[in-house]
Length: 57
Image 1 (cartoon, one colour):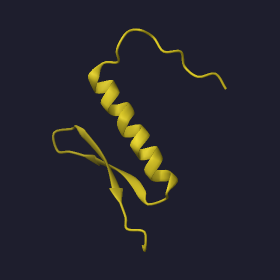
Image 2: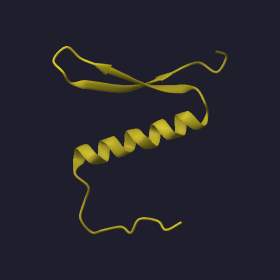
Image 3: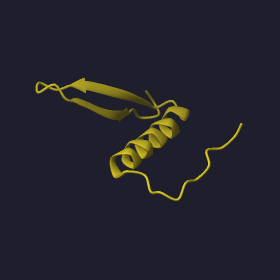
Image 4: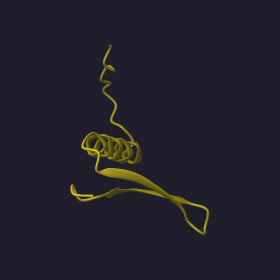
């Protein structure tokens, strides 16, 4: 599998933040204790966050 080549240009900050969230979610999902919760707010925006359960659940 070919790894994406690193370009010299920096990632846009929002994209970088989202990418970090994806990485964190992936790590959490690997230990099977997190789920991604998507909420639609009243103003139409979407809020996404991870909910981490304790290991005993």
